[in-house]
Image (cartoon, rainbow, N blue to C red; front, side, top):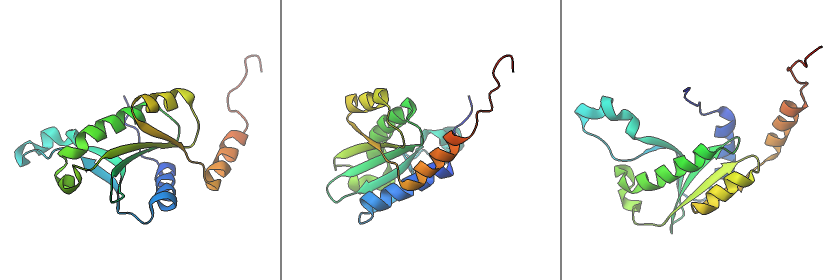
Length: 151
């Protein structure tokens, strides 16, 4: 299975979203969550610490944010994992007793993913700034490269 790359589109989407919604709150981007392992086991267990796209502290709660250009179920699973790992993260021990909320931010609506989010107490947010609409127009406006049979 190929590892998914964190795309520049998603990074820009995250930056715009954080600026629009949480610009006045402390925030951390691309942060590892989970317990730290012993130095001698670091290489072996390096993958145990996962990357959350963003963490925001509002003064009353922690918000974990996962951004996906397209709504995919693995984003929901990632948020569930991050929610369980956050209180175990040494760098955030001072925040571990605050309520934790999760936000799944994407550019397109998908009812199945929205329902999955609701079942897991995750906010499903469709965020489409103007530049996203321009990219969609470019992406979907291109002629198909698929050749039809018999042509």
